[in-house]
Image (tube, rainbow, N blue to C red):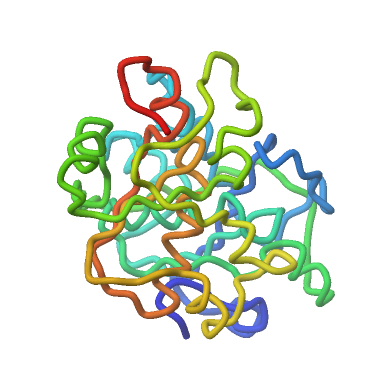
Length: 273
């Protein structure tokens, strides 16, 4: 069993495990503009992990912003999550928003959390049991947060890193967006990338909604001994690149620039390439 992902076969074999909670982190709208194969369907017994509303700072004008530990704890307990829960997160696109949910649990200090490789499409393909999505009320959990601020970076820290080059900044957006060859999807954003960053589009790390084998990932992902910072459009797909580095056994410190291009691209005083 990997540190970060599990297969649908593994999950199917462990459905009766004590303390197992399956979370559906699908987003109703995705910036990739991909239509999910399964609409209003979930893995049997899954609970909806609402990134947009319950697990974001909704008072922040930036989308998908990191919630406060207090609000995260409240929302996690509402889903019946306990401190000893073993959590498997998935989404309806295979691997898209579920790594963000994984990272949120990691930054809150929870160890036992994995992404379902291939997500709902792979689960459905195997003919495993699904059900209609439903809003349920769960017994309140006792989840506690041990917040790890070092896993999160601000625009000020990223700006400082342009000068110090202490960490490698990895941008998970598509190459045309990175190079500023296409207009940004969100209105009012400049085109281009943060100076000094490298581009590893998250789509290069996946095949049919699953992570590529480790050997192939190792050929794509450049490595040295510097810490790694990850960015994208709004902090979601950056987490895909982060997990890919975990999968090849890279132990360098890793953090996500939460504001990502949605923040950087709208502030004229910040430099771009």
